[in-house]
Image (cartoon, rainbow, N blue to C red; front, side, top):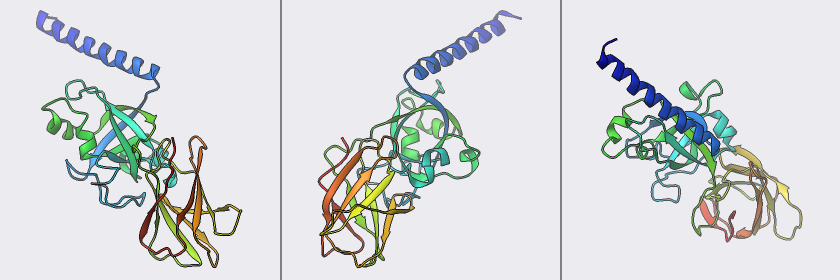
Length: 257
């Protein structure tokens, strides 16, 4: 082996050692391995809407740093709203800084299938992991190996919101829950009607949409929300008024943490 080939081999070995060291220290801090791609516009939010039902995301607290999760992350919609730090490992393109993303959509097939832990990020979130001046190269790199870990969602002082979905009636109430902070994911949602002391379980329809069938319903409505991952509970009292309207969003006064 000539000296040039030997030097190239040494460089490759050192790079492999650096990656292994990075992974070891990351695991020690609770990081795990996954893969990531991106979809939608290079500077967009992935999709207008998504399987969680949050609707258009730009200019909302969710913003552009969002992504679709494979089924092990999406959890049949109960993983909606969960937040993760994600950082890529390719040293030639990645800055090493993590981006915090919210699960707002599902990635059911392709790289997301077969039980893989995979993030299909918005172009904006994926590009934030790049070194300065390397965003376009990173976006063109295809599937990336990444490290990820679960983190609390933080929307500042923003409380949870409850949207009454179109089609709701005094006998069938459908709501969408937005901006759950802390754990972010929803395990159970319960309804209490006016004049009652009984919490009635709601049924998850899809994504972050929950419904209650029965009536006539009597407002104002209170909700008890329990997280999936930590079983924390908050109560939003009388958040939807007696004279509620469909396709209307009502802001509570509470949130997790």
